[in-house]
Image (tube, rainbow, N blue to C red; front, side):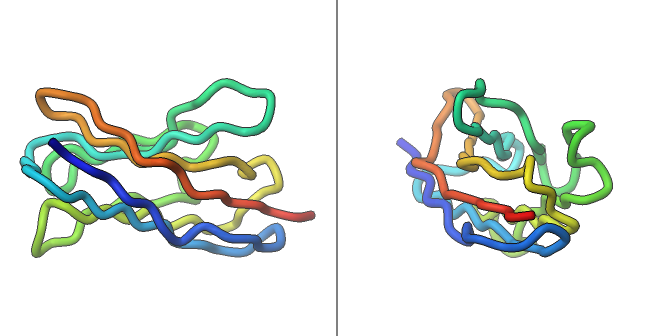
Length: 115
């Protein structure tokens, strides 16, 4: 069983930055995938970024070059999403997930970007 806890959300103005953290408790395999999805009001949940292993990353086109996902080097159970140059359309609830043999989700953290 794996539990995920996100933190770091908040409110910023456009152009600002935030760093989200996701801490996983349980049996985490460094080869597993950890990442982030987001869901804006009235929209479907969408992929944001993912990291597989220590440093293989993938990003949605909408965040490429602005967001960076990383994994704590000393542990497989902490993932960060550094978000820079935020746009109002980045406003959403951001959910952390982990996938190895099963898929697990956190409860989400709100990010609000004002213009």
